[in-house]
Length: 155
View 1 (cartoon, rainbow, N blue to C red):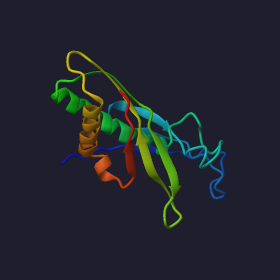
View 2 (view 1 turned 30 degrees about the vertical axis):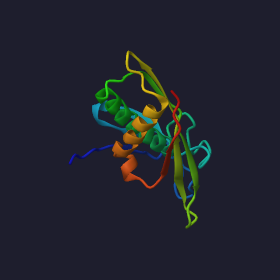
View 3 (view 1 turned 120 degrees about the vertical axis):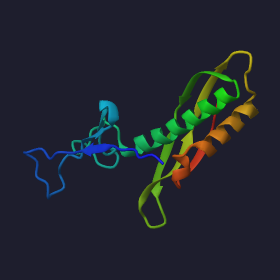
View 4 (view 1 turned 180 degrees about the horizontal axis):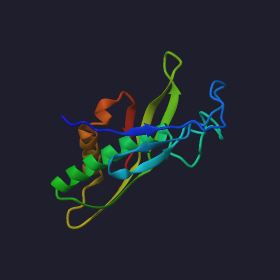
């Protein structure tokens, strides 16, 4: 078992009131190695100036996390099978909807990986689908969530 950490940091601006809820929610995510990512609510959830359109929002980060985990599992499985992946690009999308209790949640994420292979062993479209299925089964982030995850790959 391993433990992973992140620091989320927010500071009220001196001139901003707080109790009227009209304060900025812009904050940072800090990770080991010194990486610091500007973060904010989605502008669709909380419009500027209470949010920052240029920052990463939690919904985007969640979708990127699922995509990243899937990609890393896919690359590991492809390498074990002696397929050479030259490029992997995923234009993942997520759907924010209300659950049965009327609460917002990310109900569905569609991973749309486009994988470019090279070398003597090029997998067939069916083999690529199987690689993605195995990658999904081995993605511990996907195994940790209840969001429906669909995979629509192109080769």
